[in-house]
Length: 102
Image 1 (cartoon, rainbow, N blue to C red):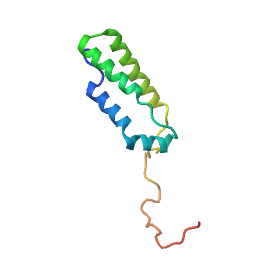
Image 2: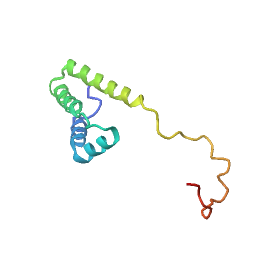
Image 3: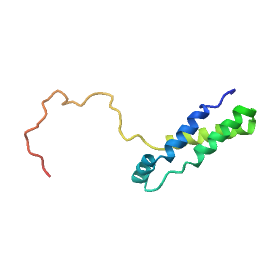
Image 4: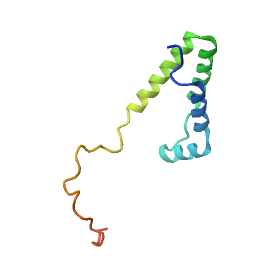
C-alpha cells in the first residue's frame, strides 16, 4: 500500500462525528454508554504520520485498526433478514377496517 485505507480527512470526520452531541445522545440511547472516540483520533494521527513520513509502524498500526473495526462490524447479525421470494399472500388486499386484538 502506498496510501492509507481511507484518506486522513475521513478519520478526522469520523472523529468529529463521534464527538458530536447528536451522536453521543444516540449512542447513549442505543447502547447505554457514551461512545469512545479515542480510536478515530489515534487513527487520524497515525494516518498523518504515514502520509508524511512513510512510517511502516504507522502503516501496520492503521491496517490493524481497520481490520479490528471490520471484525467488530461483522460480529453483529443484521436486524432484517432478506427474503428470497415475496410472501405467499402478497397479492391479497390489506384488512384496514378489521379490528386488531390488543
